Image 1 (cartoon, rainbow, N blue to C red):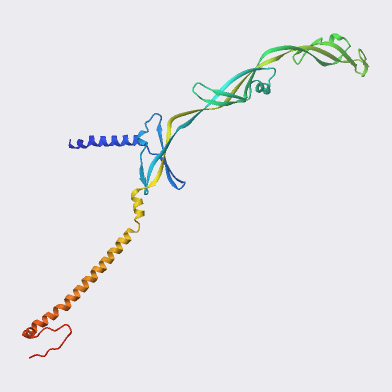
Image 2: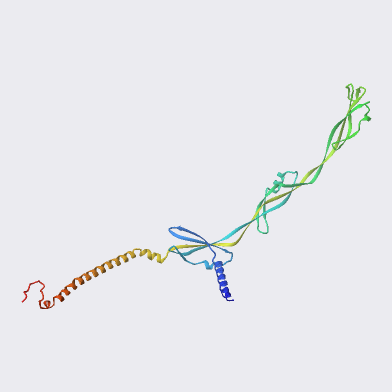
Length: 312
């Protein structure tokens, strides 16, 4: 049960960290020099309508320079959405000609829909379909012939008066007789057996389309631009920090201070040495005087000029 005590503070800390991360998104940074000055550009991408006040006016230090904000620019972040689309169209032509279709409708078509997608579609020639919408009738004459062999006489009753050829009803209009002695021409022949070449003709009508409806399909890619975010670019100008300037101005100060300390140490050591030496020279002369005893007391002091005196 005691473990639950840390759960609430830890949860609050995590929540604060998440909130801070949301308020200060990680920017992209670009550093450059221009006109002898250092500049830094930080670009933040935020959702449209998101507050940017917490990003403005802040200064920071980097590599001995203090950077102050001097400019801010905004630009929408554009995202392009695409989709494949198609449209159909119709036109009337006099023949099954793709050239007429393209001339009537055009090879391209502008597309735009209510969702904001736009694009240019192209005519798909393979998709063209024709349907006849008007007809005219034309009549044609067709001729054919038929051979009859081994006839006993030139009796026309042995020859068919009507035949069908290629779906057309034909009527006999002439006979050419040939005898077995290969003599004769026209309607006469000489021989015991006869051959006949019957000539037929007939008419037929054809229904020909005079107009067509052509259905075509245009295909292509449509695009739509959306912007749900804005990029803010903050420009900073770098200036040397005050501590850095002072350090550069006092660049040689440590050397002077160090040199002065060395000189002071040398002077102090010299004085100490001289005083020590003088003390050492003074102490032995006193000791000699103590050993001689009364002789020192009875002996008069010497004058500075070093005159000699005789002892009485």
